[in-house]
Structure formats: C-alpha cells, structure tokens
Image (cartoon, rainbow, N blue to C red; front, side, top):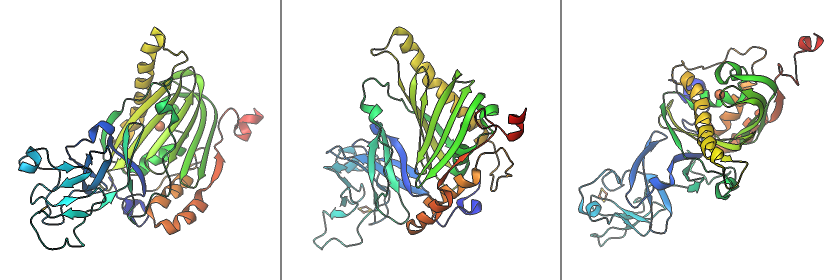
Length: 358
Ligand code: FES
Ligand SMILES: [Fe+2]
C-alpha cells in the first residue's frame, strides 16, 4: 500500500467529507471503539437517540472511553447519562460536544482544556455518517437525499460488510472514469455511451451497456460520488435500483468498505417472483463490486497511470479528488481543474472516426 503523500494528493493525510462509520443499530448506550482516519474513536447513542462520535481518550489521564468492561461505572450501565458519556477511570463526564461538564470529586472549576474532539454525525439510509475535516470546519456539503429509504415501494438495502482493503481510496476513485475495465471485469457488452462529469464536490459516470453479471439487456447507470466517501448508482432496468458503496480510511493507505442495493420491484406488493428475484439482484450487485475488489486487494499502488487513448479521463478524477485533501480555501482551485463533461469514445454512440468510416 502507498500513502496519500506518495500519491501526491494533497497536504492532508485523510480527506474532508461525510464517511460511513457504522450502521444505525451499532450505536447504543454501550459505547463502542472505532478506528478510522488513523484515530481511535468511540461511538454511542445518547438517551435522546442522538449518535455521538468522539475521540477515544479522556483528557485527564488518557483512558480509552469504550475499552473497559470492569469499571463499576460500566458494569452498572451508568456510562451514558442523557447524551453525555462518563470516563470509566475517574468518572469525568463529557457532553456530546466533547466538553467536560462534571468532575464529580473536584471543587475547583473545570479546566478549559478538559474537552474531547467530537465530530458532526448524521444517520442516512440506516448508516451512521461522520464528518471528517482536518481543519475542523462545519460540513460544507450534505449527502445526496435518499427519499427511496422511506418509500414503502422500495426494498431497502441490507448492508454488505466488504471488510478491510490494504489499498488507498485513490484506487477506488479511479474506477469512476475507468471505461476500459468494464468489459473485462464486469462483462459489459454493447456499450452505448460512457461519459464522465465533475461538478464541484460531485463526480459522475454515465453509462449505458449490457452487464454480464447483472443483465443482458442494456442498462443505464448514473453513478456519482457526493464527496470522497459515498457513492450512489442509479440503475434502470426491469428492477430500478440504487446502489450504495461507502468507503472510509482506517490508516493511510487502508480502508473499510460497504455495499448495499435498494430495489424498486415492478409490483407492489411484491409477487412471489419478486420476493425471490430482489435478493438475487442485491447479491448480483455485490458480486459485481467484488470483481473490482479482487483487483484492488492484490494490485500494487498506481502512483501514476500510463494513460492511453481509449482510457477514460483518469486525470480529471484524480484532480477532482485533490479538493478533499487540501485546505478548504483551495477547493475551488481544484474544482476549476476538474469541473466539466467528457465523452470517452469507442462506444456505439461515439465511435472512433475510423470505426465510423467502416
Ligand atoms: S482518565 Fe478519565 S477521568 Fe481520569
Ligand atoms: Fe468497477
């Protein structure tokens, strides 16, 4: 694996944006340890239902807030009170904003430095997302709206945990503009068109082709990242569907990934055929992604791509990705380098000139 610095992506090790760190049921009154962005974190759900993600170590004497089963505070189930969390060691209590609001045994004022870094969190499609920003700024974009999640006509995704990849997320992002892998990896056939588009914090791929793993018919795919960690792909065919892929850095050059597919069956309520076909379709979507994983899990880092005519616009996607690894004040500069729309030739609609002459 290679690091962000070796890829030359930017000054920050980890990108700015919304990232999945768990599923909604993972957040309970029992704080759990997480590790993302090279940091130890804790997550819990306060009594109001609010999910809190904060750094793991207490400022008093650096106790891990979620790796303790034997303190009486933990054994008595008293660690979360309201939306606050108490340290298992000396019982200092912290609000969801990370500020210490009680030192039970000390008559002196609470030191100003008695605080833990806490992160913006939201629940989206049954997932827990946290905002990561090395500059500690407020979110400047939101995940794409997900009305399908609350629509009873759609069968919601169940999340597939794809595990840890020793691979920099740059390699995953490269997939967005990678026209030439679609045939060999996914069995794309009869490609009608392949287009790429960058607009500020969104990168998009527009594709119409058959797909040997999923469908013989030509399917249209509209696939986009909103920020660097959350991909959605709308596929229209007999079953309309919306695929989610989330990936979150753990260490520099290592990530964890998840997949899910929500499906709109043509019949509501579903027919017995739909009941069988929908899970099979969800499984097929996961298998298609695992075909990419097989490559990512075993490849060497590609610090620069040997671009040839016929490849998609990899350079644009790499320029787009840089905005999240550099100070927010420079994001516009990277967006200006990547914003635009590209058609990759070698498809039915956009053949090479020599194909057209044939
Ligand atoms: S180490 Fe947390 S209260 Fe002392
Ligand atoms: Fe792929």
